[in-house]
Length: 296
Ligand code: PAF
Image (cartoon, rainbow, N blue to C red):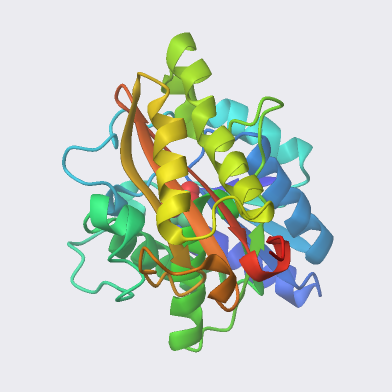
């Protein structure tokens, strides 16, 4: 496994791989502090590609002024061990100066899809994501890029960017990885106190119960599902709901309260963002209500 820190070195290493016939190139962009969720992306990349490139870069552009950029967890040594174990060929770890040597005057932004959910609570966040992912795609020029569905809005936004801009890369969404008790893996879980960690299980529980109620025909409208979500989450005294939303997926269009979920064509997303103390967690479930709902 090679570790490279400059764009020039990375381009040279990738040229060597391409010349040697080691395509397709699979790319897993990360912000480090890797966990089993990242490992699952790396394994999928290994199955689909001959060269696996992973980047570790905590991108300042996607953090708001009062967010956790400075305290975002970092552990390069552990990350490199995991990458080596998962068979990564090249790890790219640029500095902020390497990625942004001059003030950024060119950004990439996707409209509409970024105005809701995390886009509403974190203004500018997705412009930071689409800009850095664009830069990374230009640098790596991968055939495939792998992203976890825990950040389902990120997947939807990046897919739209790739499609709107005719970018020559396939976005491969990968399933959410959970702890045995249901908590979705996230680098930010490390910030939870034991009490917050145990109360945070309401996220996955509320998603399970919402889906089950839809399956059993007990919750049929958008308002009923939203009510169920908020009542389950509010049963945890430490939970502060940022949003609990039901939207179409992947276009992330809003649905009126009285809409019957079985009338929605295609997939929906039930998406949550909930704060426990200073830690904001997200989770979601994407499915086709028409396929799962009981016929009543
Ligand atoms: O999902 C992440 O870790 C980040 O948003 C990404 C895609 C690496 C861009 O900084």
